[in-house]
Length: 275
Image (cartoon, rainbow, N blue to C red):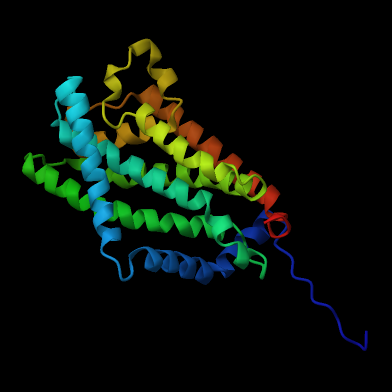
């Protein structure tokens, strides 16, 4: 009308266009990540202290229950170190999963106002968990000094296992955040799933107590390979990786993450209308 044209803004439909859009909106990713960090830590002490106390207190409880009462083996590692090496990747995964799973609901007002690749929202929420992970490493360093443990060259591979935990948490977060938009019940399932997963993952014990014939089946929990990898990288020769189970865990992480990406892309166009 009157010589005016309408401007229609659409998301990139092809994979190439979508990745281009993500790059163009990289500043939004950084803004959302920085905002979440500020909200969690600015003008608060308990947030930082809690990031230190939660894994420390869990380590103490697990050490008492599994070492002193159940008398489970620790594969030659001091039990507090063994537990804490399993606790920090699990805490990172659970925090990243919880934050990313609820990220679309928590940013509903933003989703309905302007277009941007929605995958930026769950991706930016994972950054907060990296801050908690970095804080937890402070206690780990203190434990290693206390028990006189000096990591060898394997410690250089620690970022590899951290990336695995990140990819797994992000992949699960893509699945659940998309489902959360349509079915709000999923936000109540996540805390239970995280708590349940803590006890079926080798955090308070080592995978070596699992009978050999069941270890491959046990590795269907992808965090088994991640946690074993953390202990192997930190404790060195005191622990061993069950390679068939590790490769199975790695394959499952890739399948879940790739599937989560395509599921998220499929549901993305309906978020603004549904949320």
